[in-house]
Length: 332
Ligand code: NAD
Image (cartoon, rainbow, N blue to C red):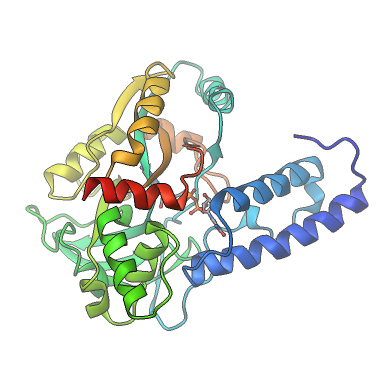
């Protein structure tokens, strides 16, 4: 939203301050897995930065969080180059903003489009590379282009197949997460040992996967939901929904709630349904993701430097830490 009262000089000063603060928050969140503030506070300041940058595009700098995906890579890990970058995702916070996004997509495509609607799992993105059906490399998103090689750690996760039923050579991506019971168990254990507790299941998952000793990861029960096939080998897949079905057939853990809708019909119900059910799920979700279902249309829409144009996250209002604990206690 444009701030009509602000001068360019004042915007410049405010942007410098926002960059410094947000980059400090990002370092704590992505590198140390220990956030300094709630996501809603980060999002508020980030959206202010986006508004000012939109109003004064020549004030955008290379170190602005609007130009960066994730953060630096822990130098103690071997590095992996993502030939196809692992991007972030645009987000909206209201149904009006979602409708605006969908209108822009349909205007660009020239007709009503089908969306695959999925839950936005609150964990961290991972990439798995298979050669002839064997898992040969697993990594984190890192800064989007360079990730951390965590192959041995990922091999300790039960839901990740190390051998596929077919000798495929391809890459898949998805979310690694910690369920709410394991989060509570781990934090209780850490508290008893006088260690610092994790702020939320997302940070606990990231802190558990990004361990130099895979045995530590093995002792924390992590799980996965895979949602993207990056390279297709000879798979006959034309839509995002078919990609999910194919991954399930191949033995990956795929979230069962995804559905295809034409235009935004049905999206509101999906958002409302999972917004209400959210607390009762055993895994954390922070929103709903809409993806253009047709993969050829996705390719023609392409990406910005930071986000794919063909997908958007509708973010739920923040969940309070006490709510997470209360819900876990109810479901135990
Ligand atoms: P994001 O986490 O909002 O969205 C992109 C990610 O969504 C993907 O990388 C993927 O890991 C995940 N995802 C989950 N379900 C998915 C699905 N079904 N399909 C596709 N992707 C799915 O973006 P981001 O750039 O990683 O991080 C921004 C978020 O991190 C914001 O919500 C922000 O609040 C938070 N953050 C918080 C702090 C803090 O200090 N609290 C600091 C930095 C960032």
